[in-house]
Length: 186
Image 1 (cartoon, rainbow, N blue to C red):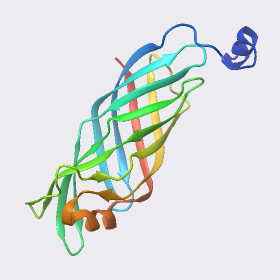
Image 2 (image 1 turned 90 degrees about the horizontal axis):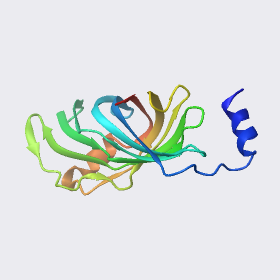
Image 3 (image 1 turned 45 degrees about the vertical axis):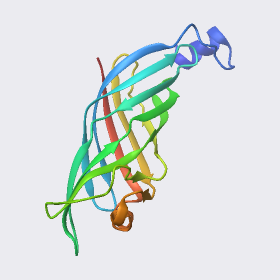
C-alpha cells in the first residue's frame, strides 16, 4: 500500500491533523550555487538545517545556516573582483510527504570586496533589497536520512553597497541561478 493510500485509509482524504508536537531533525548541509550572470560558482558548507516536522500533515518549518563563501571573478574593464557572500540564514517551510517540496527565503549579503587585491568599501549592509526565494525540490528526500535538494531561482537588486551598488547590480542580479543542497542526517 502506498503512503498516500495508507493516509487516505487511516485519516480520510481530508487534511491530516498533527499527531503531537513537531519532531526536531538536524541535517548537515553542503552544496553549491551557480550565479548565472557572472558565471560564478559558490560552494557552501559545512552548514546545517534545523527542521521541525508536524507528523500527520508532514509539513515542516526550518532554518538553513550556511557559512559565508568567497568568490573571485574577472570583470571586463575593472579587473579581478573578489568578495565574501553570505547566503542566509534561510527560513524554509513546506512538505516532506513523498519527498521534499518547500520554499526558502535567504537574505544575501556581500562583504570584504577587493578590486585587484585592494579593499573596496561596500559598507556593513550591502545585500539584496529583498530576500532571495528558492523553491527546493527532491523526490529522494527521506526524513531521518536526508537527500539532495535542487532549485532554480532569481536574484534581485542589491542596495546599501555604496559606490559599488551600480556595479554589483549590473553584474549579479538576474534569473537562471541554480542551487543544490545535500542534506545528511546527523
